[in-house]
Amino acid sequence: MYQFFVDPGAISEKQVVITGKDVNHIKNVLRMKVGEEIAVSNGVDGREYRCGILQMTEDAVICELRFIKEDGVELPSKIYLFQGLPKADKMELIIQKAVELGAYEIIPVATKRAVVKLDAKKEKSKLARWQAISEAAAKQSKRAVVPQVHSVMSFAQALAYADMLDVRLIPYEMAEDMAKTRSLIEEIRPGQSIGIFIGPEGGFAPEEIEQAMAHATQPITLGKRILRTETAGMTVLSILMYTLEGQELKA
Image (cartoon, helix red, strand yellow):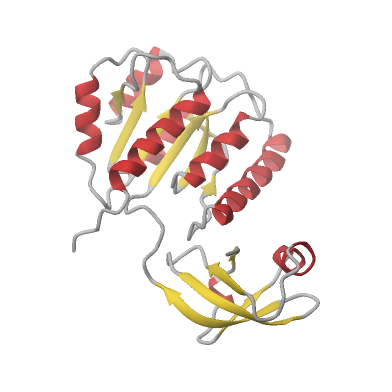
């Protein structure tokens, strides 16, 4: 079943109205017909709205709201991925897979050893591209929200932004205590917000680790092997998804 995102105001008691670029996609790419069922999310409440297509106009697809699926597909914790800017187009793959694995927000970070430097003009076009990738991945994986991809932050800005989160972890190649890493992850509870800091190809500078620790960010190890930047984030997200998936929030 195909999934689409609409603004909350497009959903009423009995109808859902789809506008924008999805209209052409539904009509001319997917060649869907009146009566076919689709899933719609508003990106806010975590619900899935099951709809049947009633009518297609030039600029809208009007759907009948059939029922609302309350049990959402989102993880019980919000995970924020702070990703050091990687080389080439690796960020696109990282965003795609992070969305599939349940990340709630993705924050590109300009770290000391990051080779990539984005000027304002390039950042604007890159950000639009990255957000489009996030939306496409959210549709493909049937997420209830489209994770926001932020503008690039400095490392200091990223640490300050993460101060609001309950748990902050930073994989570091010099960290060695796997038992401590397991303990930190196992102690995470549903409902807690989690920040994950991933370094670029060159890793984090020692002074950045010190800065992170000053912000109560815990260094962790991902094992004895050195992982690529595009692998490290996926590894942590996969571990967290396995740990948190299916857990209920306690009242």
